[in-house]
Length: 244
Image (cartoon, rainbow, N blue to C red; front, side, top):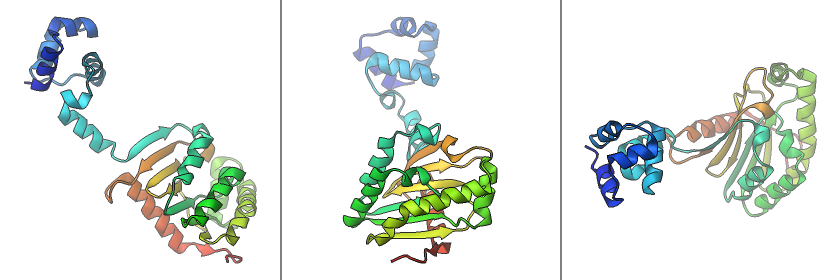
C-alpha cells in the first residue's frame, strides 16, 4: 500500500480515473500503484508533476536508491568541446584550497589567457596549484598520439606548446609543475572537491570524449577514485628543471 500516493491524491481531490486520464493509462494500473506497485520512471515523474510534488514525496525508497546510485555525479557532457568555457573558468575560480590539473597537455586550457590569469589569481589567494603534464619524450605520450590518430610527433608538439604557455606560472608562488610518464585513462581537473574528468577512449581525441562532473562527498564515492589516481601520479612525477 502506497499511503503517500493515496494521501496526496486525496489532498488534491483526484481519483484513479483522473490520474488515468491525465497519464493515458488504465484506471486499474493506477489502482495497482496505490496498492504498492512501483510505476515506471516516466509515470512517477508525470504523477509528481500532476500533484506538484517531488518524486521523493511519493516514493521515498526509490528516490533514496536513486541518490545512492548517483552520489557525487553532478553532470555528464557528451564531449569536452561541449563544456562551456564559463564552466571551466568558474570551476577553477571557485577553488579556495586546491587546484589540480593532470593531463598529457591540457593545451586547450593553456591557450586560454583568461584561465591562466585565474590560476595566477587563485595562487595569490593561497590556493595550492599542481599541474602535471606528460613528458613529451615519454613513450606513453607517443602512444597516446597514435591512439588519437594524430601521430606521436604531433602529440609531443602539443605537450611542448602547452609547456611554453604554462611556463610563466613557474614563477608564481603556490604553483608547482611536474611531468609524468604514465598511461592516462582520464584527464583530471580538480578544484577543491569538484572534479571535471575527461575520459580517454581509443581512436578518439580527448576533445571528443565525454567529461564527467563529480563532487567528492566522502571517501567511498567515485570522485575519490580519481583523486587517488591524481595523487599517485603526482608522487611519481618529476619537477621541471626550472621549477622555482
